[in-house]
Structure formats: structure tokens, C-alpha cells
View 1 (tube, rainbow, N blue to C red):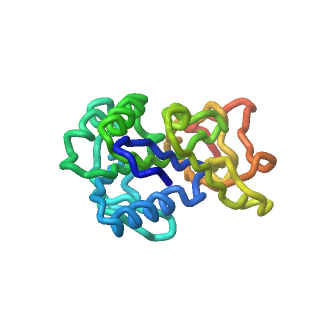
View 2 (view 1 turned 45 degrees about the horizontal axis):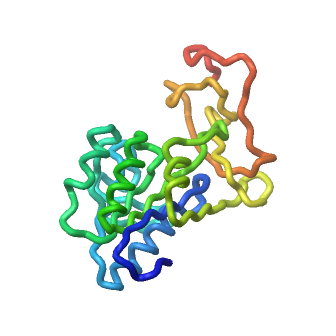
View 3 (view 1 turned 90 degrees about the vertical axis):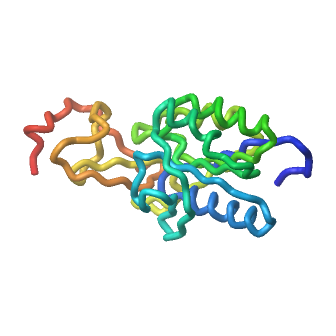
Length: 205
């Protein structure tokens, strides 16, 4: 992966949901541990799917992680949690503010290997910041693909469904009273509604 030097670096693992980003991160962390390197992992407080103090993959793998608030202060606190670890892993980077880029740069400048994972697109198919900025400054980038749930082709986009239908472009992050789900889809099967939005209070059930 990297020549043995005294410098640090940043690795970004990205792609759509269900593409195996966190599983790939965990694979790298396991290899680092086997090599005798100490690892510190971090996950955002907003993501509690795998427990409050662990990051996990859809395949069921987990790793103990320190949970930090997905705020500027939370991101800035990451270096304070370190105790000499050579490898720093940050999962779900898309949930953190832009200050994460500066923190990753500072950690790499301090000689650490920084492994970051996160989806690079919103459900609208637009850049999901700050992942694109991390891609720009990283030494290594790997973009993974999932399988489209509609046609079986390689998937690169996140399909948001609200009450079983493609989400509207103007839908808020959470649609109150609605059932929400996500799928991986290819470019051709990805849908974002742009018709007149339906008020959440009158949305049909």
C-alpha cells in the first residue's frame, strides 16, 4: 500500500451504500493489527446502527470505536482521543462537517495512517461533502460498487425510498410519519422525483 517512510498519509474508501466500504475498512484495520500497529477507530454519534461504541458493516463485522459528535467540536476532538496509535480510522465521513478534512490532514502530517470511509453521493446523486474534498487530498482512493437491486448491473448511487416510492428532490432528511429505506442502484435505475412535492401531513399511506 505504501512505502515504509516516516510520513503519514490518507486513504479514502468510498462508493454507494451496500458497496462494502466499512467491510473494506475493517479488513485494513485487521491487517494493521496483525502487523502490530495500534489502531484507533471513530464513528459519528448520528450512526448508531451497530451499537453506541462500535462501527460495523452490513456483513456483520464490527470494531470497537470511539463515538464523537458529528459537529465541528466533535471532529476537532478526535486527536485528543489518541494515545500514540499509528492508524486512525474514521467511518461514515459523510456525516461529519468539512473540518474533518483539516483534521485528517493534521493527523497525516503527524505521521499517522488515516483510513476514512464514507459515501460520496447524496440520494440526489450530488456530492456528499466532505467526502469529495477528502478524495482530493488523499494519497489513495478506492471507489467500490454495489449491485443494482433493479437490474443487477454495478451500482454507484443511493436510491432513497419514501413509502416505497423514489424520494422527491425536495424531501427533507427525515419525512415525518413515512417509511424510509435505501437501495443501491445504477445510473439508469436511479430515480429522483422532481414533480410537485407532497406535504408530509397529506402523504398517502
